[in-house]
Length: 325
Image 1 (spheres, rainbow, N blue to C red):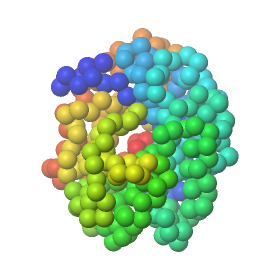
Image 2: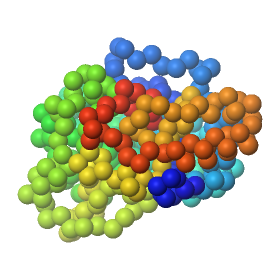
Image 3: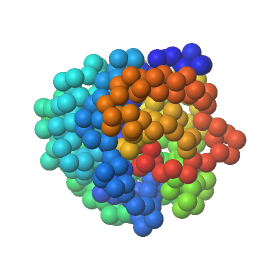
Image 4: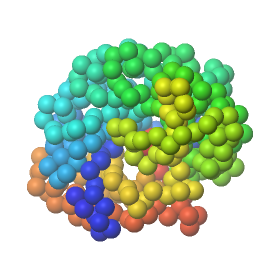
């Protein structure tokens, strides 16, 4: 699929639930959020229909997201269904890691290629604070188990928050470098709970500042791309197996090369992470009307915005959990 800006759209971020077993500071409110009624979620059959049609139109990469996708009952069965019927070259999943140690082997056998795991702190108490209740030891066990079963390359995602976890940049980088993981430091974005809680813009720290801090500790050498590299700029450090990446949606927007669309757990097609409006595909998916889904997909991609607009003080009210990250 080609949009109005001439960009090739071949990557689908697929949310399978808005529920999560954590309530991270920048993602979802601890008390305000109410999950979708289960009847409003797309069934596995509806998800597979949507993905099959998307693949027919050129989608070849799918990332399963949430909420926390591993809380969706039967998630391994869904992955197997997607593998069996859709022409996906890269099938990955984003997770907070708490359930990963138990499920990693089954996920790999079902056909999942790799995982990205959120890791915003290496300090147990701080990790618990940021995630509002998370167990760092469980997350680290999940990361290690993912590597053991071959869900590789394992990527770690760290949202950098000034005054919250920016004093751990070196420790987080060194952990990934020594352990052979790829860690991406991501700029805080003006989305959902980050705005509602006041975290944005106070805690924003630009990627250049993060990179400069790490360059004072490590000799960063430009590194090539890996599967699913996306918008990150990667670096390596001599004699260490891991890699460091920087994702800078605000200070260095990558909209000109955007290749993705999102489908929420309720069947809403989102063309940009920054925009609150979308197009519902749930009705035609429930009716099994593949031709209508295809028509709506093509029409929507043709109207994909050229940029996120955050530079014009735009904020996104929808939570990251609803959008699928």
